[in-house]
Length: 382
Image (cartoon, rainbow, N blue to C red; front, top):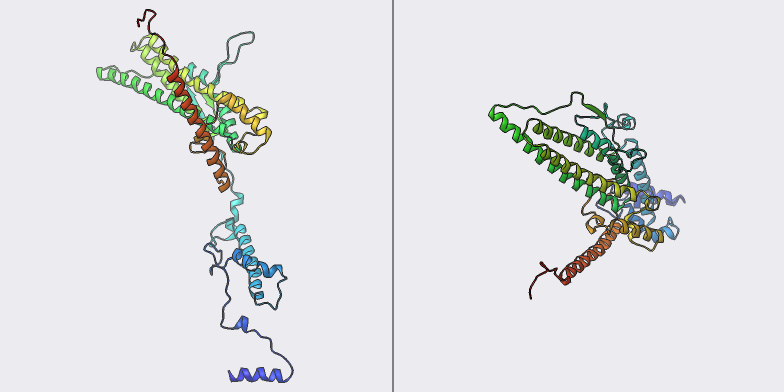
């Protein structure tokens, strides 16, 4: 210590002032703002320091100010953070233990593709017609019948519309999913009944086989949305149902009228789901409806109000649970990372829609109470 003091005294006596480095090399440590999610091991907060030094920086960041050292540290931390981000990007987000050359192989990884051709095998004309549909014959007044292939395209269109945060597209897909589930439950129940009847015959010693086509048709699929494969599942399930019905009829386990009734009930249920889905897709695909989204329910944009009015006129008000995304389709292209402001809007508009639904239910209940009861007989006595 005496030697250092002697050197400092020698420099001063010779007219040379020593540079004061005690603020940097001394024992005292610099104070700085910290945060829990800091990228630095010591918890240094760039945002906190920027806020604390804002006035100092705005005044010109004088080197003689005691805050200057903190300002230099802030510049250094900014540069280090930028370098850390660059290295993270160069590693493609991989663990630091992974060599950069290996991590960059992520860029060369190809997208997933189907390793072959997806196909479904169909045995019955009923199922094949249900998938292909029937166009209107030229010169005929017979209405066309929509098929599964076209509905798969309609579903893809609705699925794409969900990417625009369209609540009516969400509603259409939810309606389709619930309708499809109900139809498939009916088919599963009917199939089980048919198989049980055939099992009963086996107990008696009659081993019947399920009728199959001598030349089944293999249909290439290649759908562009997850919903297309729902359709293929439905079609093959319906195909097997038809085969069982015709098997029972051929083995005299049910009459012609019973078979026709079973086939008619199932086909009408499927077509009802198809036509409801096609209706949503057709109207929502119109050019004036292409931009419909949840943000239309707020603000005073004229075109937005027109889109809402048109949708309500065609489909009725969208259910509040759909608008608030409390009920959503199984597959969607809608962005899920919502901001706090967007969540607030969803809740506010959803609450308004719920109030309107409640008011409508009360009005319908009052109307049913006030409506006079119809006489049960023309000879009713007082």
